[in-house]
Length: 425
Image 1: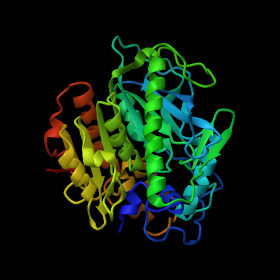
Image 2: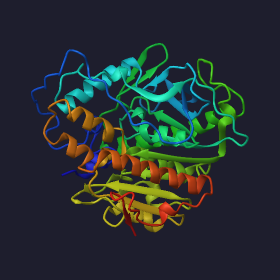
Image 3: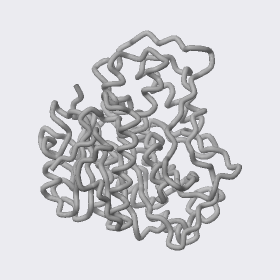
């Protein structure tokens, strides 16, 4: 059974933050287990489901440096971030497919995830996993631009882990910007092959948590500033690397939203509270508390939001369904929010059902003998293909309604097409 710590921003002090890097799973985390035998000497190639929208997808990375802000984790450095911009592109040309992870980050990811799953590193070709986006493809021309949506991953997680939903939104006519939160994330790879690894201090858990959320909100606001530079025809990349043709004109920042998984969902809510450039937001299974036991909640919980917000929960938290009827900070946030709101629940899912693990873990489980309970503890027993389609449908419908002013009947009540989704009133 999962506890709040697996859904919470931290789950403990700095040492516990490192545990958040691992997949949510039963108590076997950290125990030794025999590694499975690879089916051959060739590392396993994985794949992601293709986006279903009408537009091809392009992608480009941005190296962003905030020289007006000292890094909250490494005080000797200015704050610097890596972000990826995903956008509707012109029909596919010869541009290469964007990698899921750059090479050094892929190697680090492989080592960490292999230890969690109970297999040997090197058995999965993470460096060879590609997305469906073409690197640097020209952006699709649109007279008014496309709405912009930001994505923030869970605490200590990689921005790549939201690729399925991100690509889906881009294929449906959104510019989506994913951000890694440097020195909190296990590893962030910068241009030139520089890998910056996690550096979190040994402090009280609430202090680490508050620093995390404060840094993430500042990251969000800074990236929005840099997107404004891009939309105005500038190049915010620190190395002034060439940008895809037409990218700046593709952004319509007058229609902007944000969503995130776990700590990223908490980030989306807190960023909306202080930055009115964000018109709508969604929290995918993230607690909005620093410490549940003493009701140490985020500011957004007690103040609420006056703009549209979507909650999506899964499985159990503290032995109870993770909905606004049962999770105390969600319940308080719900009561204090005056804007449009909706709570959707996936009873048979789990915390990482809202990430790419919902598609990747079943592929690994079909080939390797994984540590007992790792799959169900991470993504539950929900049908993987069906829940990915349902998440895509509801997240896209939410932003279509609130960033495009297109009424979505799907948001009005349960649908037989999506039997794994429960509406919580």
